[in-house]
Each structure stands twice: as structure tokens, then as C-alpha cells.
Image (cartoon, rainbow, N blue to C red; front, side, top):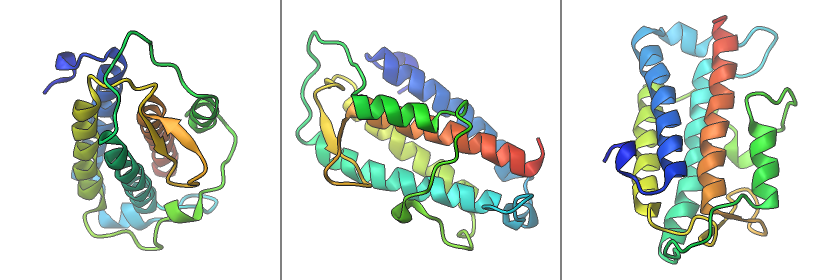
Length: 182
């Protein structure tokens, strides 16, 4: 299913944003050496491989919660999606335009050495996002809610979850470009 076949315009836009991220990741998969994936960032911080590993880990934990919530998804009604207060704050703090450094929740921290084929694994994990978007198309993204993978006391709506994942990836791709000096 292409993004134009989705009923929900927001999901279609997010899939379009995901396509751009994937195109950049495919270029990196074809051009980055193992040494470049393991080279520490100037001034310290994660390697490019660790950034990809972090995205895989964080996304998979979101996907698990989203898959659980799909079973109780509410059909789309007449209400338009709006972010929750927490979702709006999270997207703003994760935005690539935000210059504020954020601590990484322990469950999202990557291993010191990323897996072999980490960029390929990242691209494969992106397909899970696409499958979830197709399954969520036709649901009320405002009323379908899930538990945050970081804190079970926090509940966010599906629209928030999809936006958080894409904005988080955009932020980290900006980080990857800085590490590579691009």
C-alpha cells in the first residue's frame, strides 16, 4: 500500500517522511564502512552504529505497545486527531529543531557495539512501522490509546505515538549527519 492509499492524511504524511528517512538510510547502508559505523562521535557520544541501534530498540518497544493497543482500537469517528498534552511536549522536545539535550531512558540505551548489519536491521524495522500505520488507518488516532514504553503510568494516543517515532528518527538522523560531518 502506498502512502496515497491511506485514508488518514496524517499517517500518509508520516509515511512520506519515513520514506525520506529510509532513502537516506539506504544510501548510508551502501556507502558507510564498518569503521565509519564504529567511529566515536567528535567530542564523545554515540557512534553512528549506536544511533541506529538506539532507534531499533526504542522503536521496537513502541511497536510492542502499539500492537497490543490495536486490538482495542476505536473506529474513526467524526473527531479530528489532536495531540495529547504529553504527546505535544514529547514531539516538541524530540524535534530536530530542539537544541536541548535529552537523557536517554535506560531501556532505550544501545549496547556499546551495535549488531552486524545494523543499518539493514533498522530498515527492516521500518517495515513494522508501515504495517502498523496500515492497520491503524481507519482507527480514531485520538481515542485509540496505548501505554508509554518508558512509563506505564503515561498513556498516549496513537497519533502521538506515530509522530514521536518519526520526529525521533529525524532528530537522530540529524545527529548522524553531524557525526559524519555532512
